Structures are given as C-alpha cells and as structure tokens.
Image (cartoon, rainbow, N blue to C red; front, side, top):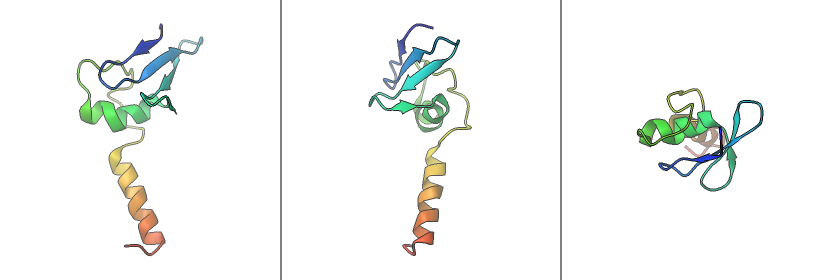
Length: 79
C-alpha cells in the first residue's frame, strides 16, 4: 500500500513495511483506523472513504466519548 490520502476526511495512511499502515488524521495527529471509523467514517463516510476499517465499530465513537464525559461529570459532582 502506497501512502494514500482520503478525499472524504483528509486522513493519510502510510505503509508500515509489515503489510499494515500508520494513520494520521487530517490534523496530523497519529490515530487508529478503528477510532477514525467510529468518529468519522461510519457516521459521515461514503464511497470515497479509504479506511480499511470503515465498517468496524469497535473503536472510539461519539457515544463512548459522551458516556465518558457524563461519567466524569457525575464523579466530580457537576451533574
């Protein structure tokens, strides 16, 4: 796999030399394909998406982030 940039979200996939890849978000931050799938590809993606994990919902999601924020609010007496 050569270096590829997603036209939909701007994430870039770099080959790692072992048959896999490294992911950088459009912001340049290192990420995981599963997290990109849950936060971007599944809710907003289309046929332009090149993420090989684009249909896998095991990574980070907006629902998981909201649940964590609510848990922290409750623990700190903010809700």
